[in-house]
Amino acid sequence: MQFRVPPNNNITTTTACANNHPQPRESNPKTTRVQAGDRVVTSLILDADRIIVTFDYETVKVYSALTGALLQTLDGHQGGVWASALYNSNTLVTAATDRTIRVWDLEKGVCTHIFRIHTATVRAANTVVPVNVNRHNPQLAPKYEPEFPIIIAGSRDTTLSVWRLPVQELNGHLSATETEDWLLHRLEGHTQPIHDIAAEGNLVVSASYDATARIWNSHTGELVHVLVGHEDKIYKVVLDTASRQCFTAGLDATIRVWSLDTGSCLHTLTGHMSIVGLLRLNDSLLVSASGDGAVKVWDPATANLLRTFVNHSPGTDQSILAIQHDDKKLITGACGAVQTWNIRTGELLDEMKGINSVWQIAFDHKRRVVAFQTMEQCAYGQHSTTYLEILDYGVDEATQETLV
Image (tube, rainbow, N blue to C red; front, side, top):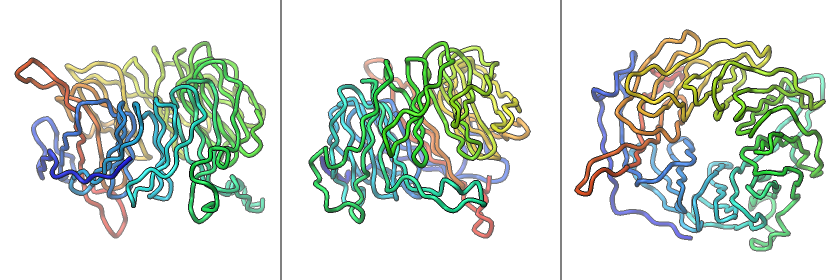
């Protein structure tokens, strides 16, 4: 476990879009492309002026979103890092094939805690902070859950674990090494690996290859509901606590809408022709993506289909590998292209081509970051190279609106 500042970086920067990067309509972004090795990017966090990247090997890297410079290299895991979550901009949680959960102090660049309880790859990890769970009903008094920040992790060993999040000002009196000081619950019941988790307040929903999702109480460790209905593996779950619902998607090509209160299936959303491996939700839109090349936008309140986007870009593979969205735009990544759409009208705004695989996409009100792979020629034939591409569009400081 160490912090290293590298001597230099393989970075190229331009202020004009290349031929395979069509110029956005309203601005000309500064484009920075960073070579990031040759491995698969498993998670990407865009946090203000930093980009935190994990790979299918043991190193975690932190880059500057302003310049693309490599700021930190975090070593310690003994296998691929499959999940990451950030708390308070300084505490990073990662989970890996080495069966551990690690907590990092980004300011110091060191691993502060290692949690060992799982017997297989830890595939998912979330940090959960106290929120007013009654905020959607102003007639109720504020009620904050959980009691303090926690970590929830899901593993291929079929179990979940719930931990105190090591925050110095809250629990600095606890040992940094003793697992029992930090472990709150181990949640058992699934019969196959856990692939995804979603959590808010004391609610946790886990999605498993056993074709069930389960709702848990992270405070008591109790199982609340078992959600039965999918016909095959479940890959994704998202929570909509305002509507007291959750959404799951998986290998049976359906999306199911569940009541958090009763555990009953409210709707089954159909139309995809292949695995639904990506699912995202914001306040007003639910977005799903499938191996069939289609991205569908749904109204989460009514379960109505609003729009379907289909990747018809010549020379690209169908499968959608990454999505991000807000109320205005949708970004989709497939083998061969990254496309930006107006999510309300369906208009294609721009397209980045000349890539092999898209690993991850993130954007905020100012920047877009894409992690992707290309195949390049070398003396020994072809080899793969992983890049981060940072598009900085600028921002209207008066309105905080993106200039694109």
